[in-house]
Image 1 (cartoon, rainbow, N blue to C red):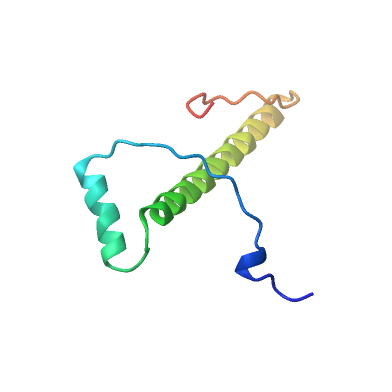
Image 2 (image 1 turned 135 degrees about the vertical axis):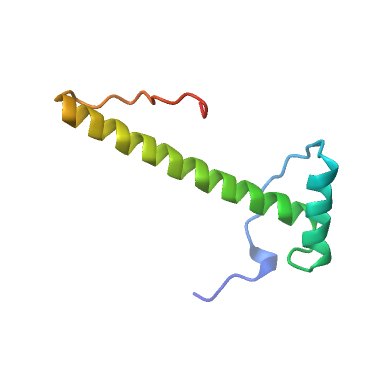
Length: 88
């Protein structure tokens, strides 16, 4: 099978939201658009969320690894409770 054209791409339902930005954040988004790095604010926000999600997942994996190492040192089976509850 060949590549799918954009006409046949799966459509994702998007939920409209409103956010309040600091003037600095708004100016940064506009700078990214004006520099032609991104063409729309939606693209900037989607990319920022992708990076935040990746960082969050890496942090969760790090915490799980640290918890497993602690339990091995103490001779206890690892639990699924995270020692850091900031991201729960």
